[in-house]
Image 1 (tube, one colour):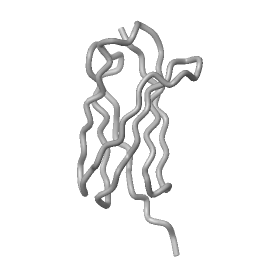
Image 2 (tube, helix red, strand yellow):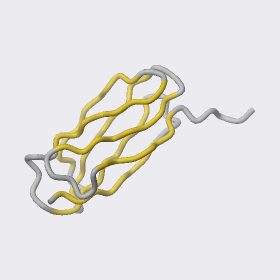
Image 3 (cartoon, one colour):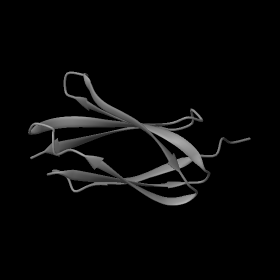
Image 4 (cartoon, helix red, strand yellow):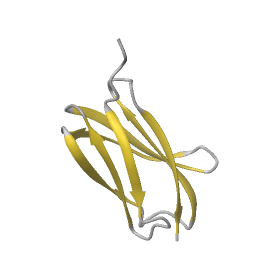
Length: 91
């Protein structure tokens, strides 16, 4: 039996980011996801847990307090079936 992909990542935009980035994805079930932002040195700058619902989801990531540079967003599902790292630039 093939494992069902719970979350299908769609996009992070705009990139480069000014004050707010939007993380967009589709979910096949109601679940919690964890979102963390890291700098290029691997230091965790923020983390949050968000309840998402079946269908298309958009999460706003506040980036206005970040210095200009490169960052990573790590999104993972409580179910353990989904983990995605996305790079973005803050301007």
